[in-house]
Image 1 (spheres, helix red, strand yellow):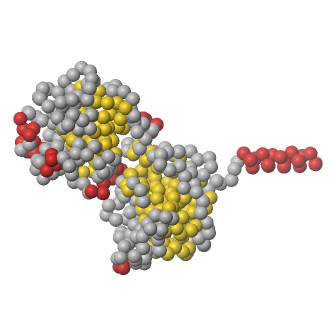
Image 2: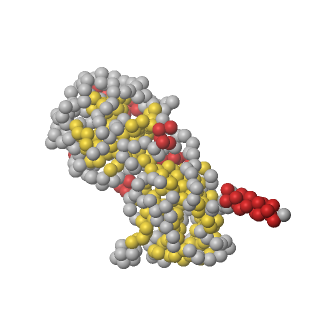
Image 3: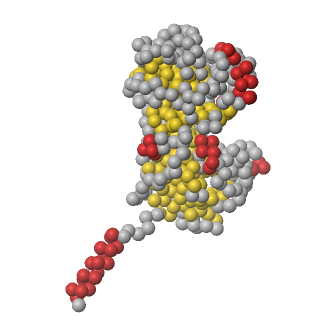
Length: 455
């Protein structure tokens, strides 16, 4: 009997070890703020009816209630309710606090899961609080913009594993970002500043059922077709590869590119160095140095993404549907995503209604952009061009759609008729063409040039 009892006890222990208990940890006990501390702002936080309730106050900067612990890789789940579309909030991830910033008032900085019930509807996007501004505005995944419901609790999920951050709202995938800025930090609940607007004082944000998993976590699969904001230069993550993305520039060679109207890559005027593809300066003389370069492949329907960095006063462009049939002098002809220093280059003040400014469809349609979404000269910007199978075309700048049009439509042809392109028959309507990087005589660098062919 004694031996049988010992054997059965051993089986119980082994079974217990083989089947670990639930690995989720509650970050909120439902009745107190134990494990949390307020580190910035004057908004009030209290535990009430099973929720952490944050309440806005006037004349306060953004307020944050942060975990006392820091977290690296984790899956975070919680429920959030916002009653008013005028409110704004967020959940900080892998974040930090500087107690000397803002003249000693302190500053929180780091990744933020955006909570945005306004008409913009960017809940589920990723913001960089106190540092880089918007990283993944939810305009990059427009289908997810209607998921958050005002006036009721919504399920929020964030997955931070290695360099990848993914978000969900009410169990639907939203944002996917690859970034190397932070590997760990605290989690915090934000009450956004309302400035001096006393009418918004007393607005409340509710957080409940906050839990985290840090052990034995594995990436959750995302469905195909979601754009990845990848901030690692010249690199595709496994999801992007499986989703059909390919690099047009590998970061180390000129493979896949030749000079326009040439059979080889230019011997001068272009440089591949330190992961950058750079057109060198020739004092503003268009095509006088190396000339334009084009892809060896041709494309019809595609999603094209590229990073670019301007030097002061620089001019360049990314052209598409380039056929090289015109044999014109100067830059080869094609639909052009304008790359330009709007403040210092005179071309920005030519054309009609700003249709030669940054991100515009050159000489045809001006880009509608806010200054806050244009990164300064010397910093990296991300351009994006989508050509759908129905000939609908969109231009993006740093995640924001700045224009759209229908290639080959009557309205498009009417614009061509009053542009510099009127002399070329059926301009911009070729069924396929090359991608071109323009040599306009100024130094401009490109990287992370990637394309996905659409079907």
